Image (cartoon, rainbow, N blue to C red; front, side, top):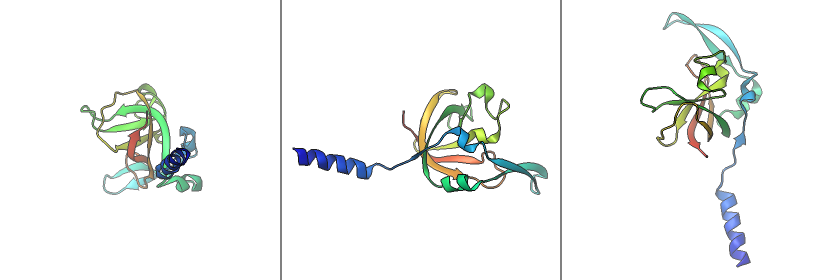
Length: 141
């Protein structure tokens, strides 16, 4: 019986993937520069990644934040360090305080719900809406 329990523990430990727990303060050092986009004929901001942030790119991470619905159907979401009234889109927060969620499975969430997600962190170069994305994101609560 003891051998069976030991085998179960070993199998569970080997199949679980480790993730790095990060906090929103991890992104506070993120700087931005203004760049002129020829296609849109407008000045936009582009992220300047620090070496410690670059090391997290492509890593499986865990982060907690507030859900922000991005469309009326509730099919696209962002995760924010702050509730909707204070988020990057509505308040005085910066773009480093919100990330795009690319969900592993379609799930409905309500704005301002607090959830913890595990997914692959992606640092986006260029001038898109979100400098940070969480790919294959899955809620763990």
